[in-house]
Amino acid sequence: MSHLVGADIWMDELEVNGAEVLARYRGEPFEGAPAVTIHRVGAGQVIYVGTSLDDVGQNLFMDTLLTVAKVTPGVPSPDNVEIVRRVHDGIDHWFVLNHNTSAQQVTLPSSGVDLLSGKVISGPVVVNGRDALVVRSNATVD
Image (cartoon, rainbow, N blue to C red; front, side, top):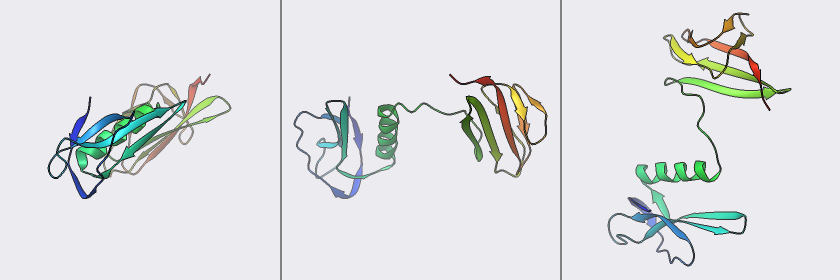
């Protein structure tokens, strides 16, 4: 299934030979013509973007790249709260940085100990404004 995307700056007129059309142009001069394609070759694949994509097209392109690369979503977090996972010796370490001035609530995938405060973290936890947590998880990574 292909989507319609707006384009500006330039638009390549694509000829599709064996590729799958992911998106088509919305608007003239190439209304309905292929704008983004994917071609699978052997164990690899090539995605070709024939234009400077609008917001809809950029979102589609990024979603496609993440799916193709098998990247899974991270831990949900409020705006301006950064959650990063690192693994050391088979143990998850979660870095939570609240860039907001107000406190924010987050829930990590597993319980653990905040290495900065020594507190046990389990379930939802409030991170103060402009503060951070470094949590060593109790769970191990296979």
